[in-house]
Amino acid sequence: MTMKLSAAATAAAAIALAGVSHATDLGDAIRDLGGNELQIRAADAIYVTCVSLDITPAAQKSAGQLELNARCADMTQQAFFLDPTPNPDAVPPAADAYGLSNSGAAAAAQYLALLQQFTGEEASTQGRYATEGSTSQFKSLAGRLSAIRRGARVSGLSFNLQGVDVISVADDRDANGYSDLYGGAAGEGDGDSGWAWFANVEYGWGERDRTANENGYESDSYGFVFGADYAFNDALVGGASINIHRAEIDFDRESAAGVQSVSGGGMDVDSESLSLFLNYAQSNFFASAIASFGRGEIDMDRSVSVPLTSIRLPGTSGTLKSSTDTEQFSAQIQAGWSFGEGATSWDLYGGLEHSNLEIDRFVETGSPLGLSFGDQDIDSQELMIGAAVRRAINTERGVLVPYASVEFRHELDNDSRDLNARYTLTIIGPTDTFQGSTDNFLIPTDDPDDNYFDVTVGVSAQFGNNIAAFAQFNSLLGMEDVSANVITIGIRGSF
Image (tube, rainbow, N blue to C red; front, top):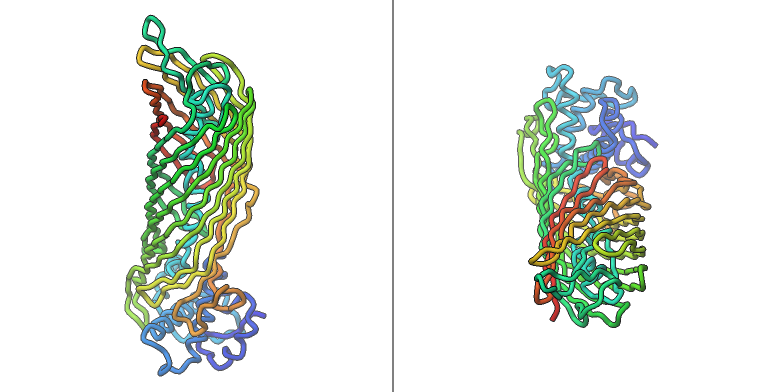
């Protein structure tokens, strides 16, 4: 049932609250003004919050609740005043709350920009960055696992992770001082058997364009990986690594008709994870399995600016702060076939990757406009098909191996999701699930990209004393609104 009341009709609103299902008078007005789904949903929640506060005696409300009540009333009255086709059954507004009647065609744009400040859309970046804003959870392992793939452990061991293959060689030299090339099963030599170690450092950057549902951002990230593996026999290698990741995300600032719709802010994402991996290879066939378990913390600052003076309150600005914990599990299986002998070789492979991210509920502090967000549970399942090529170049000082890979990825879990939130100071306090309450902000998100490409180029070098190093650049291509890139430098050796 649709509510047919204004914010001033408090007595009747108290009776109608239990019957609200979706749209309120305010939501209808926002639709008439050209608002998007995010803004309409926020308007519904603002309206019900305002009604709940209206029917509570002033003596029972805190100072923050009194301010929240006034803000909601301002937003409600202004929308009713600007509505070009008001609901005839609704009580007409008593005032032009923000004085926008003289703004002409820009009035609706100014109001909707202001309403955007109330939506909490920035929180969708938490899940978006984890699933699309950075490269694969396992990309940082590519250097070491690729070395296993092509001869760091000889006698037929092979491994491929996301199409990146790096040839290593035993440090045997001929009479002219040139290294002999050992690649995959073709090589014979002492090899890198038993225990071995590896370490990678990485720097990533990316951005996301603004959409109707989600804020844009720019990101920078830093990572460190240290691990060890053990060759059980000529066909099986297992190992583990620790991954430490830090990301800094800056929200874009947006404005319309001179009013900020997004005032900026950002997030800091810290995470640590443990990865376990196994690789089996026989002749030219290879297969692998990886599992990763991680925990993290997200600190978010969301800037809010209400620049317009209303009939009740002056303009104001501030920063809403929040912090929450995360847990993540990821797994990947992959299998492929190697072709070619000698200096040039290439692979074809395919696999499946699953990731689950849980974000705990959190509360924003610093302003009466702060929201409380419910738990988030984000799943991703991707199919991958890839090809990789490499060529070894024998030099006087060692062997250089340029390599490249192209991987096509298809997202199987491609449904959008809703974030549940509510004003922290609402009379109807936050619940565990946020389900079934009319004062919810059901914040919509965009559908994830169904298809995109993961492209890598790099070079590896084998030195003496069983030391090898690599450097590579990786980029995600073909996403509609997202770009993500990472540079990785790694070193490896044996104990």
